[in-house]
Image (cartoon, rainbow, N blue to C red; front, side, top):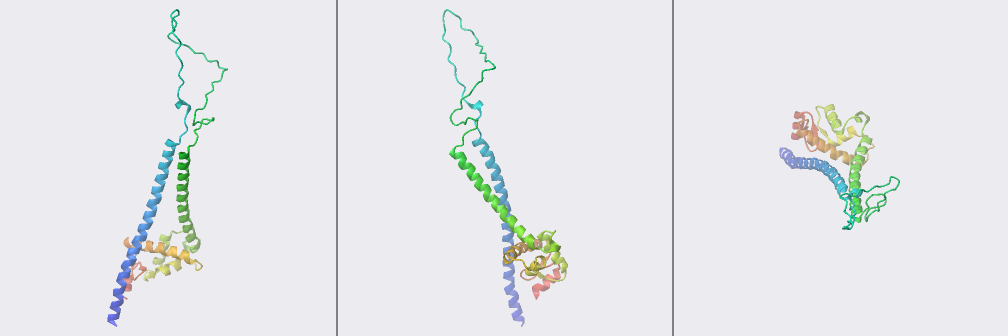
Length: 230
């Protein structure tokens, strides 16, 4: 009987380590996703600046100034040092648009500019879709949370469940049942299980609670130790 109990304990130790590794990888995944979103935002800002430099309209001040021919030098009459040009107020001055400039003064869009803006739009749409996916998953979880946890974050709800059972060792399935209603779909439960596993692993490293056997936690260190030995 004693040999059987020792064999069970030996088989549980590697599984506990594997759970630690899985929790660490999940935490790293969450951090990398956040960093990726930040990088995408920075790249979006940079592309906006690049667009301002590469696709800005050509102003009239940048048009070439027409050259005027010098009047012929007549020996009999001296050439005046300055020539005054009077423009009547009633005579409008028209400027013909040059190549590449539309009649309204805005620069025509080249294929390169259109391609750049199209790529920028696709990148923005992809980032928006990723954020929308995260938002939808969060809304799906919030939709099935019990009323008593409706005003709390998922991390706070996990801590409240453990505090409600201070002398017990609670597993992840029990925590899910305590926080979410019975009609929660299987897919939503799977997402909740991954998030709760990450929260529990992070809290255990911060000494908020203690780990018992695989996937089981308690705010009582003695209860968690006893669960490991059982």
